[in-house]
Amino acid sequence: MRHLIVDDLGIKKGDRVIVTSGFGNLNADFSPKELISLIMEIITEEGLIVMPYYPPISSTEWVKRHEPFDMRNTKSGMGILTNYFARFPDVVMSKHPIKAVCAWGKDAEVLVTGHENSTTPYYWDSPYGKLLKMGSKSMGLGVTHIPIYHAIDDVLSDQVDFFYQKNKYTLEVIDKEGKNSMVETYVHDDTIIDNGMHPRDFVATLNCKTYKRIPVGYNVVYVIDNQDLLETCKDCFAKGVNRFK
Image (cartoon, rainbow, N blue to C red; front, top):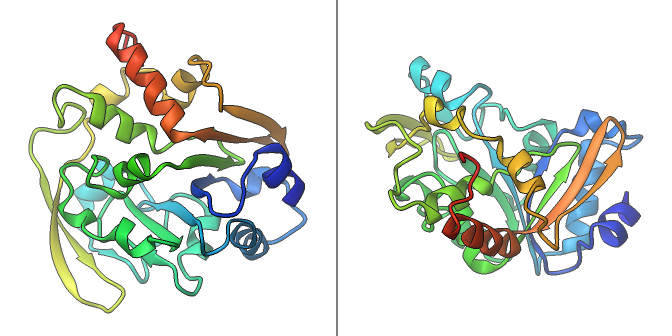
């Protein structure tokens, strides 16, 4: 796996990487903990590892339940790797009820701070937007999903809340110290989102120079430079080409 991550995907010491995973699809002969430790060893504390940590069901369904998002106990719906990663020493989590992230490494605290007050869950002032500003990569292990693409939708849209339901939701979050707070957030409008090409399929049409996919196990691994993706999307959007047309 080291050869795949380092030599094939080009991940190196000091990289900032947002990781999305489907561990079961890797058909691995190692454990999730071993994979996380390997990624940490490669990137080191000089870099930054980020994993999305969403509720175990869709955001639309989650907000209907009116359950608190407990940063200590609510399971992530983003795969077993994320659930293990969140419990590693020195991993911090953003305070957000539907689109939280876990982070480890340099500037992890800076990244997660203030997510509860971000303009949208993915805008420039969110962890996803901050990663776009910092310079970062997306890496998929056993999946093709590219969560940071939602940040690109938001920051390049003429209307910042275009992809969201008109009314915000106020949802309860319990932080790692057991403190309760209420967080106001937009939630994606499924009638809009579902009418477009899936981000992973749209990205595959863009011919980004840094986008690389390799078959592994039952799926693929991939890497893409997020700034390359952002700049490519800027050019496409300016020409009227996006995942909705």
